[in-house]
Image 1 (cartoon, rainbow, N blue to C red):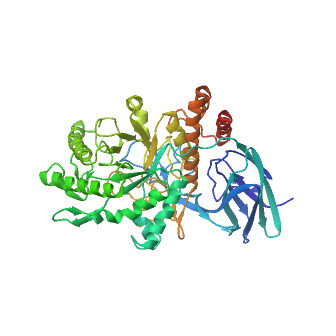
Image 2 (image 1 turned 180 degrees about the horizontal axis):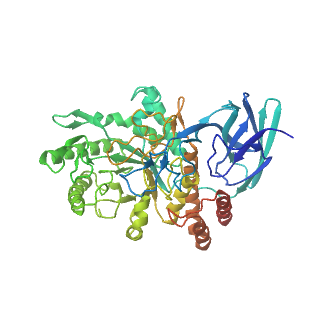
Image 3 (image 1 turned 45 degrees about the vertical axis):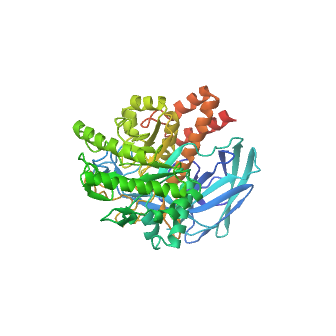
Length: 535
């Protein structure tokens, strides 16, 4: 018998570099749909030696080295934006909803490797994904052999495959990204052939997590002549084509307006010149030139039916003054009217705190806490046939589901059980690779916040991939989000097939964004119940 010590788990939970190692198991059971990809995390004691992996069976697999990532702050319990997001005082006790007291490290980053895992401080940490081959219909057995020196440890993986297929993406998902970072963090020039190829690699990572939408944020590069306000968007064409080529369905375009430089004020200024009020005659005329140029660009490329539009992010956030909100509405409705005049039929999507901008917004994206606090109002919109999504960002914290590094990993997955339970049609997050202010996400994970509306953002909030060597490296949080999106599609199938079974399963796993099943052992049982009910 092998004396190799280690730790392994196939459950949706974090693994830490200081995990206690013991005799490795010899057998593990995985339950899955026919086209699903399950994963197992390993930490193996190996001294200064490397570890060799061999995988045998009717299975497709991937192997990643797990890279430890720092968590320098704990997230505080707050529902709203603009306050204290992280706990800066290290003398305070661990918040109740954090997994550990910061600072600590956690295995989040996944570096693709071959069958050879190098030692890090006497341990080899790695993640293996397994997907049954297309000809497997019920079950199969796979062997994973781990070799350290002259010792070999074999793990028998019993793959219980249900005759259930995860559908193509119906849940709409967007994770906003930073095109400049795809150049800067990989040492290539913006707009170069190498940059475009890197964008393609990022698009594939998005597609892996079942992302359907991509947000193209228009910037100053489109301005040909600022004196006469002439615009040219052709520089965006090869970038947009990549996302459509890689299978993403819908483009988000924006913005038209900004509240910068006064986020709490009532004014909307032109997004490409925040000194130009859109309520002024000059601002109105410039905006219309801008929209005409966008219309021409979309028509030339036949993208008019594959686009939705952001006017201005969070138009009803960062103020509690009802008069300010009413003033914002007037300008917002004017902008929406002009947008629809130039691009008839286009839908407006916006992150919001309330359902107050009726008539201006077509796709409502409330913060999860805002949805919970105004559930009746948003549910009325859903019942009326309107689209309501959900988003999380630097908030909410506490017991709320979110994807921070000091929250349980399973929370990333359960966000999408909430989408099914609440009949939400989409999910939005702002941070795919938003490494801001030259931060190195391998060394610091709390993003600087320059808005003046709070402390640094929570650890991991700004990104879900890492700038690896020649490509983005995915994360355990991305994998949990992928599985959650798959779960949502399966749950929605079950709701159509058997409402009684659906209600029983969903009610045991998700009651609200603050009340849910976080026990990963029990979750595995309910996941199998889901597959069984669909069989």
